Image (tube, rainbow, N blue to C red; front, top):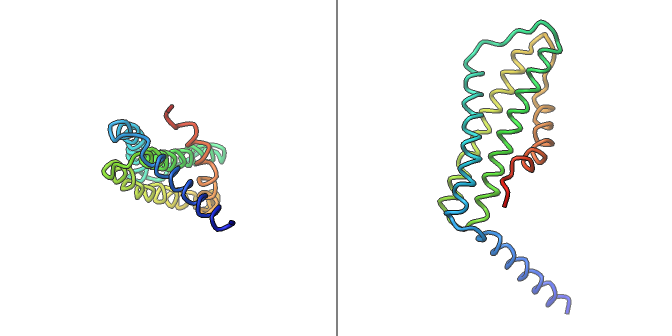
Length: 152
């Protein structure tokens, strides 16, 4: 009896997954995915400009901290948009939409390069621990993702 219940449960879960994976057409999903990818692209361009510039100098530790916090918030937003694009893409069975959402996830590397630069720039002014920054990013992404999610 227990085996039958487990089999039925697995079938129900499989049905739910199949429905949720294809509940949007490609025409519905594509603009939702593209919205998040465009936002991510703007953030990547911002990171590229920061990476191309000299290390900024600040008059006070508070100014430096505010700058770093702002850049970390940009990293959070980048990851949130990339993750949300993937969430939107998973709601369609269209392979092209899914591939379009998945490929840019490699752009997280631009945020990693930014964090490395911030650490280098901090130098003696104050320690910046990349692993602590990434923990912060990981903790804040779900909240930001909820804020940027498009209405259904």
